[in-house]
Length: 291
Image 1 (cartoon, rainbow, N blue to C red):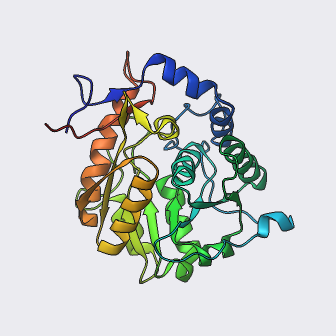
Image 2: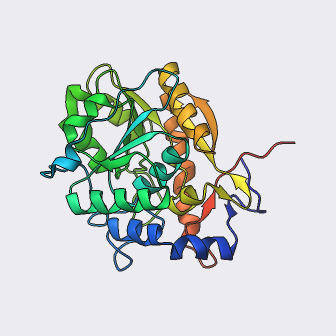
C-alpha cells in the first residue's frame, strides 16, 4: 500500500484544497457536521457532539417524496443516513454516477440545506430529504455517521434493512489519542454492526478510508480515489463497487467482512497523520499503486 507521495498518503495540491474548502457546498457540509468551531473541515469521524445525525421526521410534503421506481442495471436509489461532511461527499459521488439520493438526519433543516446545496452544485440531480420509512425503497443504504450512532441506526431501523445492502463508513477510533481502535482485537466496527443488524442485512465496509473533501473532488494528486470494499455477500460487494466506479472512483474489493478490521486499522494511522505537524489537512488518500 503506497501513495503518489513518498509517504503513506497522497495529497491534493494547495490550490485544489483551497478551491474545495471555499466552495459553497463545502461550507454547507462543514456547517452540517457542527461547523468550523467544533469540527475539522473534511472530517466526519469525530466524537460527539460533532456528528450524531441518524434520522429525521419531516413534516413538509415535499420531503415525503418516495424514491422513484427503477429497474436493475439502471440508476440506484441511494439512501444516506447522515447530513454531515461524509454524507455530502458520498452523495456528491453518487449523483455524479447518475443515481438518486435521499438524505435522512436528526435535523430537518440540515437535510434540506445539504440537499439544496447538492442540487445547486449538480443541476437536474435527483436529491432530496426523506423520512426513515423511505428506506424501504432504497437499493443501497449508507450509514454516514460515526460508529456509535451507526449502532443505534441499525437497531432503530431493524427489519427495514433486511435484504438491503448497507454500507458502514465508520471507524471505531479513540479520538482522544488516535492511537487505538475501540473494538476488541478479534473484531471490527463493521462486524459488530453486522451482528446488531436484522437477519438478512448485507453489511459492507466502504468509504472508511476516504475523507470528505477528497470525495467532493473525486481525486487526490490527479489520481481517482481508491475505495476499499469488504463484505461477505458477493452481490452486495459488487453493488457497492458499481456505485463507487460510476461516481468516478476506483473500487478495490479486499474480500470478506473480516477484513474490515484491517481497513479500520489503516485508517486509524491515516487519521493520526493528519494531526501531526505538517499533516495533510484531511485531504490525503490511501492509494494502491502498481506498474
